[in-house]
Length: 490
Image (cartoon, rainbow, N blue to C red; front, side):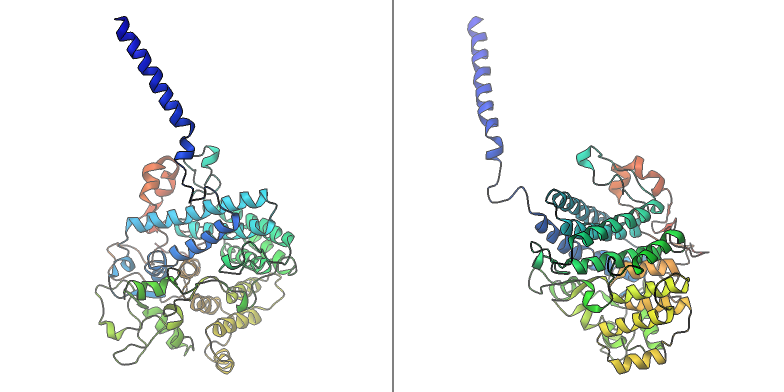
């Protein structure tokens, strides 16, 4: 018996020795010397810009749904998404892409504060708010104040209402604007070519920041006029501190290198995967045709069957003869080194025009801002000055109505599916947009108001998400966005 006990004791000592020997060098053995466990803030920021531009503006998160819900594109093959038959994995992925990007941007901000780099901090904060804007405009109420705080022990985030998220975003963007102003007008040399939007130029990120503030302010102008007015007037009264995007040279476009694997997503969909699932919608083609709009030949290609511009039904019951439908224009889909648009100069002036119509102090008349906005959009699309003058004196002659203002803005937002969809949800323009004829949902008179929540939120964060999920009807309808002031929609 004693010999047995001794053998056990010796065995345990030996095992303890072996385990202590292994664990003492465990980190070293399990570390990959070829992969860094940390990265500079500039490198992470570069990843965030590329990752978001790749995943949020591709067929899955843009062309199939936001761009069809907005009335700009139509699916001509595999029509399911345009008639609201969605893939749960796409909803899950979009949620993941957005929160993953924002989590990485928070890491950049923490590093920037530690390194006393207000330029990097401000740039990261601007892009984080761009991501949060897309998030809340997709689902409405989402995790915001408690989001991305796992290091603080918050494993399941509470949901914030859009009524609190928008003021929060505006406050954070003002903080970013002040941080960028503090950083000066130089460049962030560590970012430089890694910033495919502005090459690290702080002055341009300042303009993007303040124009994004204008966008958010005007979006809530019908539901929180006091905050919207104060924001707009603060920005426009102090252009040296709060400059805005005022020319197409300042457009917030992610510019693609054009060599594999860094190819523009719409180009990739057609030329790398060989897909031919999208055409220009009948809503867009009919609108441009009715205005004799010179952007028609830029936005669309003539049908190969007869050389005519012809859009297709959004969410049709069956696919068309593909030779009869206008595909997307070369500028937007035929260039591997193309662009992904986050903010255009014309948007700044459409916002100023709308604010001016409300009687707010903008330093401009509504007419002057409207004409500047339309001109910038036409110039961006390569329209000659003479044709611009003819258009503004004829079909686009300023008539002082909101409908004209919103319709021209909607036209200008081509390839910005989320923004065009949000504009439609806020204003009801274009009035010719419609519910997909092949939709299996009944009782609705407008295209979707929102996305369904990811299944993981209902299963893993059910307590916090339950109240928001309960307000969703038929996946895509139910509670409107806070800023959606249309009446009688369902």
